[in-house]
Length: 396
Image (cartoon, rainbow, N blue to C red; front, side, top):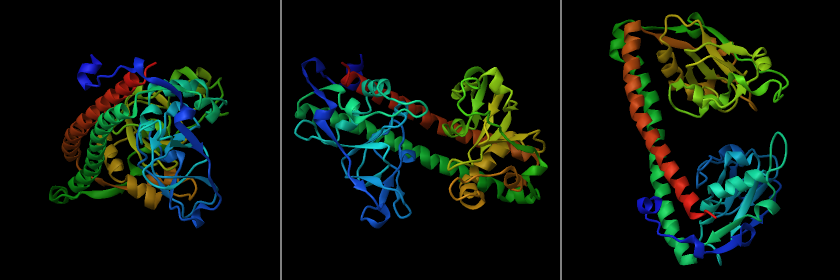
């Protein structure tokens, strides 16, 4: 059925089997002082996006003080730490990367340029990589193990045909990603336009500090971190900064939170009631709000607006969403680990509109989000199809 839908027309039973170490080599060229080199782009583990075929994000080497690995355009960067996150992508520029990434260079006598990006993102390879990862808190894959992974390859001409099809599919996904990014920016701008409209001015809106409308508290993390007596249980859902930043919907649903505390762990955290607005307040992902729809514990990287009065929770959500960049660039304190304490959050001023106007704005924003959600659904479906294609092509 899959062949008919995507028209692959392949028979990999006739392909030759190669080890990954035969079709690619690991490049480990050290750059001791990246900021003084001609290489201006740095790719850290935080710049990888799980499942992406291309590296899209990078940082400047200007302030990079530690040594790094160099790579060239056309190489594959493979994050060897925490392989379960599935981070491996083709890079289209020269630069340096974290030592926790492999730099893999294709053997073009055996493989079409760029074809390795599909292999390293196939379900078969990630299953293999995870089963061979070693370590406790942060498992790593060794190149000697990854190099032993076996994959069937078609002749070069067949690789070109398949590659064209897969890259075309990936281009469609990138167009959807771009559309989603623009829609999210437009959502922020639309909200700001609504709260500064003539109607709001006529109703004599004014600004007040957030602390006047809610008790703003931080979550609390059980100690010691990672203890099996406290974490990885099934008693109470456990909300972290990552839980807030993985989705763009206003509402955080229970099935979106994968971690739970044990009963003992739940006694050492702050329990947040449902229908509470949350805000990430630590790290480079700070300033992301969500509305909790279930009872949960929260770690200390999450702030909660308890006992909210005078503001619609959705109105507060869209306000916070519209000022994320402001929070990160102007309000957060701490150079190495930016954070928002509850005092800084409480002193933020929000336009106070009559409840009926807040409700009208919220209805419009929720309608806006329906469009965004349709893009997300299309993007998710497209990614699933691409994964199924890779699974089919590189099946044993």
